[in-house]
Image (cartoon, rainbow, N blue to C red; front, side):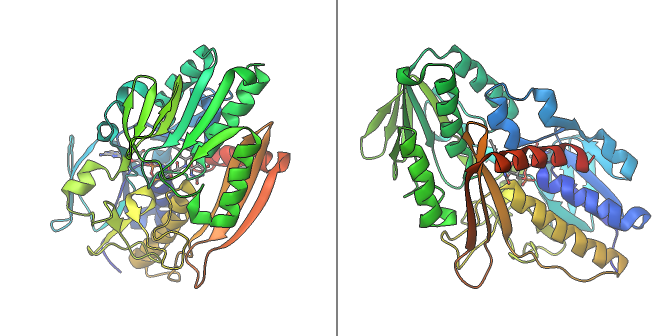
Amino acid sequence: MSGNQILVLGGGVGGLVASNVLAERLGDRAKVTLVERKDKFQFPPSYPWLMLGMRKPEQVQKGLGTLRKKGIKVVNDEVSSIDVEKRVVGTKGGDLYYDHLVLALGAEYALSAIPGFREHARHIYDLESALRFKDAIERFQGGRVAIGISRTPFKCPAAPYEVALLLEDYFAKKGMREKVRFEFFTPEPMPVPAVGPEIGGKVLEFLRSKGIGYHPRMKAVEIRPGEVRFDGGDAIPFDLLFCVPPHVAPSVVVEAGLTDETGWVPVDPRTLETKHPGVFAVGDVASVPTPNGHVPFLPKAGVFAHGQAEVVASNLAREVSGRGKKKEWGGEGSCFLEAGKGQSAFVKGVFLGDGKPEMEFHMPGRVWHMQKVLFERYWMRHWF
Ligand SMILES: Cc1cc2nc3c(=O)[nH]c(=O)nc-3n(C[C@H](O)[C@H](O)[C@H](O)COP(=O)(O)OP(=O)(O)OC[C@H]3O[C@@H](n4cnc5c(N)ncnc54)[C@H](O)[C@@H]3O)c2cc1C
């Protein structure tokens, strides 16, 4: 048995799951506090639908206040410092002490890392930006659409491909397809490298079948009005630009000295423990090595944040209560890839196995699109 003050930082996917599971398993035996700067949980997998007007902002957000009736103390505040030696977290409203700390602070966007990004690029990596991109899509009269990835790692390896396929379908439905030319750029050698060359090849086929040009190994260094410039001197012109912003660990985590040379918080892949006693990191903020993977580190995705948070919360509940079995995370993950025409592809795999990840891939179909709708419904209801 150990101290019972548990602090969860970040009320996104990982933090929401961790605090729920802890409260459910421990009840009065622990004090679970969730600190989140926003007063609402937002569901990013729905942002591709938001950008096309297929969802309204209120459909993809939910107030965090309802967690209080489960016994979770919700602190709506900014985390300004983390001291893992003294076991204290600073917020604007005061210091919070802990016995166990779960970091689920996600990623921040370093827009100024690429000159011109802030002024000329659009994206859907937060709700407000997704709404701004929606306005730009609605105003667009035709021309060159560039869609790209600025840097790796980034959240949801499938998202930019979804954006490309959904936009192609959107402009086709609007009767504007002949007026639009699509180009996709990425620093990666192929689409979605984490799932291996076979599935990456299928994604490439989808792009080609839709007439979307694909430019791998292109690292954007500057965005000028109407033109993305790459190292090596190449350029791609655009009238409308979607670009995944560079991702970095939240500055409060970096300033606390919790990151390593990857730029993220190193963890034990099976337990999500950091090297600091009592401190765990789940989701996007963590760097999870995958020695047998197609890429050296696990990509960033909500499905991983979810699974990791369940394991951490369950093990912490065991530590506090002395009951239950110790769990290990196995690296399971799955992902939908919306492909337009009301269809979605689906990929599933295990990323921490002894050999290369075993992957299962399903071609676009209506059934997978419906599954994604159910996935959204589950998230907007289950945890509140
Ligand atoms: C367009 C898009 C589509 C996606 N689609 C999918 C998908 O289909 N499937 C999938 O699995 N994943 C998807 N993802 C990725 C998924 O949303 C993330 O991987 C997931 O949200 C990570 O969970 P997390 O808990 O680590 O971080 P987050 O969910 O980002 O939560 C971090 C929280 O910490 C808070 N925070 C940060 N700093 C502070 C601070 N200093 N003080 C207080 N609070 C702070 C933030 O406000 C945020 O609420 C998608 C992402 C995007 C952008």
